[in-house]
Length: 565
Image (tube, rainbow, N blue to C red; front, side):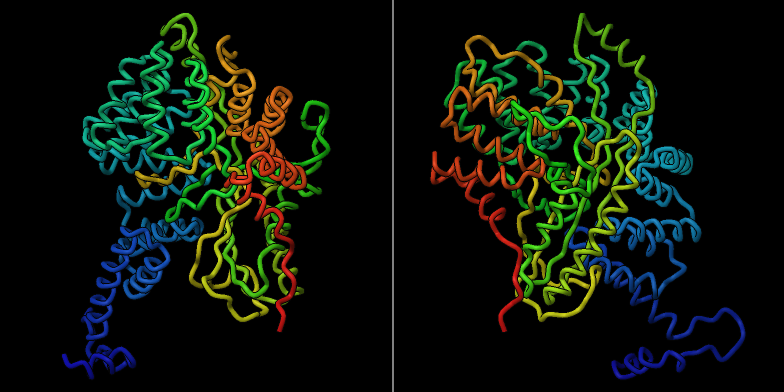
């Protein structure tokens, strides 16, 4: 077929219309099939590269050209999911299931339902997927994850074992099995599985971190410190690894080395992990008020939309966007229940009994990502855009489950070049994005090496299990309080964190680490004025303190004024 004829058929599909009755395939049908396949191949390549916006473009065309192909809808739904448009992903997965129900379709639907916090629906979808394809290890693992969350530990253990039987080379299945053993108090079995996970994937930082925890729990602090140090080197922005390592170094009398480890634990503007739908926990903008004596928060904090609350902090950050810049905003909300840890007591049997008796359905992680685009605009136009964003977020916060704790993280991405002012509204198309920091404290900026579709907060157990441990007699007390403050900061507890940092400053007023910690606690609480004061004090102690300088530069940036013409 000549290029001229191909162009003609694409421009005027009626030329290829059927002229005889019956299910004949026209030139147009064939061209559309070929184009859809090409777009699916290109879309799959962009998915592999984690270029999700380009994947959406190709796969949307493929789905339009082959509307009855369930594969096209599943691939498009996957691309939508990874760009954060989970509602659109759900639409595509439902259509794929309508056209051709299979295990993959039910699995994808279950993932969306799990991400939304509807664990009952997710469990039903995963079971249906297993019924259609019982030999898929990932389906068995997902079923086990739901069962474990419901306290059905033995059922979950069998699912994880089955996943490993089906695919023993995948590090994630080994990790899940190891964690199930750890929760049941079977530490040696847990360590064996975690080591196998690391053997398959030497950079598996989560597994290495858990191995350190097991070594410390087994009374081998030197081996534990080795694991924590390796974990920290693999993921330098993991505050949890630094927290656990610093505790052990202080206990061993290695004060200078502990101080070096702690220097990287106070980043307030971590880079976006990039690519993918990673619901990372970030703290910032909790209700602020004048702290009580000792740095404790007030008894009854003001509502979320009051001064100093999450929406107030969000509004101030949006007001700092230059008017001649286009920006994309992502806000991650996580409504979660604080983890309840069963600590090791008289023996493995006691721990196992306590775990098995705790078999209630936990509050699911819910929330999700809200994305907006704010084009370049005049001052009045930008103010209207910010108002729309805040109204939407206020509605989202009002939907938090009763008794849950809401975590909010904000990420801004700016276009590389200023765009012309326009009266656009949030949600429009975006331009090329460049990374910019966000005003929050993210304790685990570790990326998503295994491409997990749903990311939880299990790492909090690594902090909570040692958070209230008393300092050894040989430890530097002021530095130990700094470490304790970091632990509370990682858990999002601004009041306890502030108290710990203030205790450290009472013993050592020139501690730049404690001053940085005070700034972190203020950011979590939403007290930006207090954070600015803390960073300035840290810079007086050490003018080369990079963390203080970067945080101060962002916080002191005033609301953008209308660009001069």
